[in-house]
Length: 272
Length: 263
Ligand SMILES: Nc1ncnc2c1ncn2[C@@H]1O[C@H](COP(=O)(O)OP(=O)(O)O)[C@@H](O)[C@H]1O
Ligand SMILES: [Mg+2]
Image: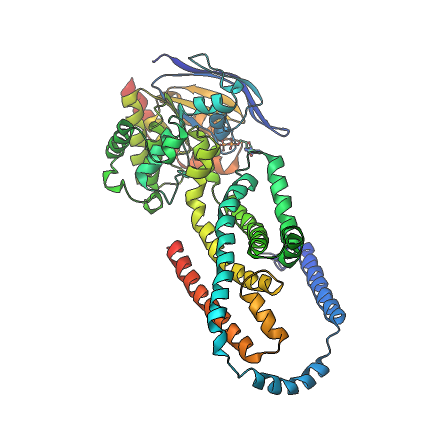
């Protein structure tokens, strides 16, 4: 396991009176691929968005290994720290009318002086890196295509490249494959895992498909009603625990029971 | 299924709809009554229309060079106001739109100023401006600039508000500053609709520019007003012909532009 990267203490978030996060304590390490599961409304998105302060937490600490307290930052300091954290979205959030490589270069917006990015004067080395990244995810043919002309799976791979372009130590991904078919989902998750492993990045991914979580995660976190109820290796995720995590919401209970999580038995046997 | 019939909307909704319909009908009837329209007299007078129309068959070609020149002045006033208004409106719209406004106070100041500008007809603006800086093309341009901004800021801001929340989120997440969010994240997605709004506004700017001419600002409106007050039907017809052909031309150009933008 890598060095500690991020330590979160007693993180709380209330929307008006409703408590979405009810005291979360957890640490993340460099190079780990963490998948977070939980029924819809459990607080997964809120948690991930508090880490880079897209949402302001109500209470608690978010401390990086360099000593920066994320919850205390404001203005330019906050933007500078955000620039070091990559984010990947369910709806890709690309700029549709802009071509693929320019979308990837947007990952540099927080790092180069604004007048340079405005004129497209990014450093030559960074532009080359963008091209290499796009080749790596299999999009070298699409470099000059408009982002809105791509398929969903291709868009999400561009989204990954944009996030990696930030040179982050930490990647946050909120339901990156929730809008994709199974085949594209697999391609995107393969890309994400390969790229983060090669670069030793820590990646925190929200997923709601338990089978995908088991297949890709180094570590699985179960969230239920704003609290962490599971934190362990994929093998720890038994059918009963899955059912427990997803209980309390009718549709998801049924989903979990319908799909009696594949391969859990096989996998733990293989690991034993 | 049980014997009770299925409702597709709750009873309260039906009541509300009925209420709104009654209110609209009432407003319509009251307006009609207040206008005091006398249809009988209108139909009687129609008999005279033939005689008046006959006067309009004349066509005084000698006024054409003047008319074209003055039409170009009107056009220039309209285009200048549109170009300057376009730039100003982009800046103001990003400051005013709910999802890009850096400060709520500035946003509501801009929005209320725009509301005031829109509430007052440009004819009234021109009279106020004329009172302060005198007649002439500058007064026309300033008055037209006001109403152009009043229109474009509101249109642009609504385009920004309805698009862009995903892009704004992404730009915020990469650590971009306000200019980065606006220029790199939002502008590419809305510039097309900005240009569409502007081309729509182009036509009304010309119409307004001609109208403003009739109250003494430069341009073809002045020429037309003079011809009307002299009952010079030949000149009136020639001037109207110039105006109509210009408007048709502008309409064609604007439509072609819009088609290109929306591609
Ligand atoms: N902006 C908001 N205002 C009010 N309540 C919210 C807001 N965002 C999320 N919530 C509530 O917080 C809870 C957690 O939401 P979320 O973090 O999106 O869950 P998840 O991503 O696990 O589905 C939900 O009950 C949701 O309704
Ligand atoms: Mg969510």
